[in-house]
Length: 111
Image (cartoon, rainbow, N blue to C red; front, side, top):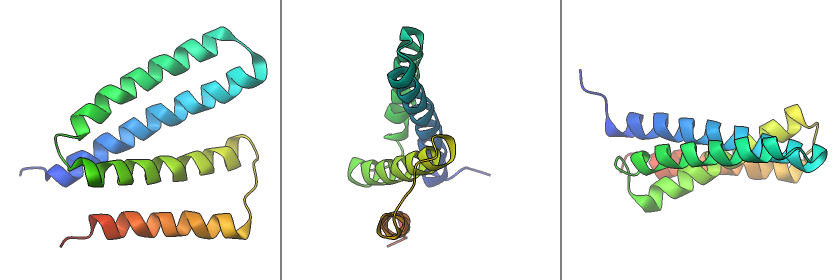
């Protein structure tokens, strides 16, 4: 059974998002604690994520890929900020996140 390029793309994007969110978390901790090691590790994670991003572009058009990646990264970042850093969102901001999720579905909907 052959794996669909769409599934490969989504798997790669999820890996990219995981690396970028970990890097973002380390950058936030670096901003709070001013430990240079956190900055260095965060930059390394961004670099590794970028390699996975390059491979994901073999599976999808850039115009669709960048939107899906950006929205999944945005949603993950908001969730991480709420859970890990106890940041709060207004109802309007929560509605915006919901619309972002809907846009990913619409962009990837089979034509």
